[in-house]
Image 1 (cartoon, one colour):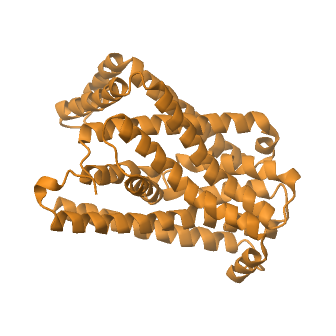
Image 2: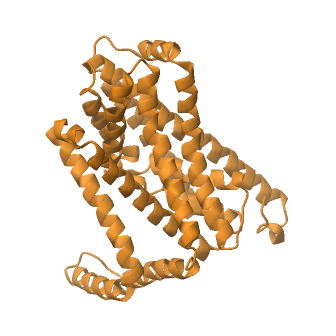
Image 3: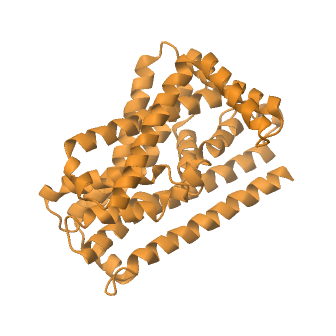
Amino acid sequence: MAMKTKKNNKALWTLIAFALALLSIFAVLSQSRELSIQDLFDTIARANRFWLFLAVLCMFGFIFFEGHALWRLLRTVGYPRSHLQSVVYASADIYCSAITPSATGGQPVCAWFMKRDGVPMGYITAILAMYLIMHTFATLTIAVISLIADPGVFTELSLLSQFLIVIGYIMVLGLAILFLMLFKMERRIYVIGCRMIDKMTKKGWIKRTQHWKDRLKNTLGDYASCRELLKGQGSVLFQVYLLNIGQRMCQTVISTIMYLATGGTPSGAGTVFVTQIFSTIGSMFMPVPGGMGISDYLLYDGLRLLMQKDAALQLELISRSMSFYLTVLISMVIVLIGYLQRRIFYFTVPPENHSNTQ
């Protein structure tokens, strides 16, 4: 019954994400009476083929870099898996993060695939925790460098955009600090957390006090295990950090590539690049699947600094379609193939061999 409920929830979130994607696209199109879907296809048909090819490479690079980072971590802890398997893990994370609020569904589904491939759950928790930490610090690095490199873009955005971006920066910084605290102050955080749980119990906000304390202890234990598991593997972690920067760059640079592909000038490329980073940061922690609608607004708000309204709307839709919608679609196809492959494997191979790599 629980499994059926989980499958229903995934299907529901997929439908919600699909509806939000359509609403976001039509909302952008509605801002212009002259802009249509046919105009977008015509613009892509006229675009420079070299830049288009580069954009497609970046779409696949976004999936590959995460997959390679997970592949590297798995090999380091003694559970090597193939690159194809790692690409499925990455695709599961990307696809399910895109269709759930605040990207909450990505890592659990990624963990399901790893578990199916015979990786112990304790190792999975540690690996995904470390990946998330490196991902957070990579995001923070790019965000800070961009803000320093071209602060003028931020000052010219609307007040709403500035507010969303500031919230995003605070959340990324807070998350990075939290991870550092978890590595250095597990015991103190546990004591503080238990006090907060006791207070919430007294106020009637939560029940099962010991259950929540145990969950907090287990969560902190997972992070402590992660630290011990990868202790002395600084070079590996640095590689994972660089791979995360590469992944972020693949997604971020697509809007700049499409700007150049459709006749943009090199002098404006930097503004488009920084705008895309602000768009990502400003929508990252919003409780909307994939930041849909919010990310579109932020990107358009920055692009209008360079071009007329219709041109900005057109570039926003083309860039967002390639960097997000098509990437998610590709990830979904990979996840579906990977899921079917594992279902067939588990029905046709004896149970004693299920832990073997496929």
